Image (cartoon, rainbow over all chains, first blue to last red; front, top):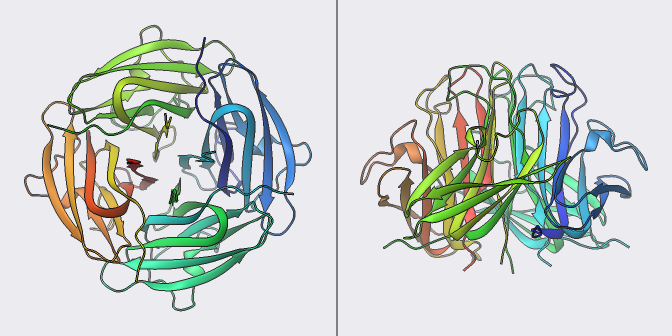
Length: 126
Length: 126
Length: 126
Length: 126
């Protein structure tokens, strides 16, 4: 039996998918990822809402994380209800029905040598 | 109806706008950004105070984030009450009248290949 | 006498050991590290569990951190019960019997110029 | 009058000063920084203790942050009681007598193109 860890509500205030890439695909494609860990014994039903600077939020995008699994969600790959435009500022709120942990990573390969960052997302304490 | 997430008071202890850049403008201009997410249904009135190593704090700089919107504030672009000097160490405190989430990102393009970091800012728990 | 700091349970949702490297070994080998700080006066018995996207968790991997010491654990070097495959998405839960602090770092040297990130891991508040 | 923000006790589990550098000095020297923000109206007396993997902690290193000021402390520059060796894994605990905010940044210029990361340090909640 696995013990859950995390929170049910998270936010990532920084979002931006660079429009161009260098290097072999798909590893070196410029991308943004929300890494989700579901350490619990129940499936996690996750809803992602995307916030923009100049229009109403879009979502929810729905993904499932099986019990005791991790899922690395590329924002690039979200299509339903609509794809996230490139070179556009956005933010996201991630909600699950069991505690999960969310970490936010970007690989930016617009230039020949890639840049990379990662940060634990903001966890709503309640 | 959207549900708010975050805190009303944040701090970024690291601040530094590199004085030079390589690559196409403005995407690849060396810059520092505070990404603000206002997931609530009320406009967020945000005040940013800049702290220096050798003189009194400057501010507040005022920005508004509409309800259910994100705003990526480039410190480079702040001008009122005064621009932030380049190549100078600073820190910031960010205060809002509704809960927001703050993430801090720098793109450093002083060299030919850019470097990038991002971290969730420090949230005052109370 | 040293005073402990930290928590007993941590998670890192992002995990990925790049399969290739450039530059002098072992410093510039692509790697992922969990940096553990045990500021207490007792030895820390640490258990690391690795979560995957498509199979059951593996572990625990066991490491010890002596009192008042830091240990930088390269995930690349874990072998018992089994090595972590390269170019594979994973996540980890790190548990100790005394409070510790965990920070997560990756050096990615797949390209000629290395990329680097680091973030404090997610601490379970209870 | 300025309002304090932060905590009195912080930890950085990841520490490593690369032994070599490329590019103009001192901006592009490989370095590690603890960025300290003292938003309060009282001087902050700060004590830094350095933890190693194979010997007893060293410190305290003492720095002062005036009221309403930020101080970016380069670990490279700490000399009393002793310099921190290069290419050596360490960790640090940072304690102040007023609330401060601590952010941890590294610039790694071992290769021609620099890598950069930053993360808010771990704050002891009590």
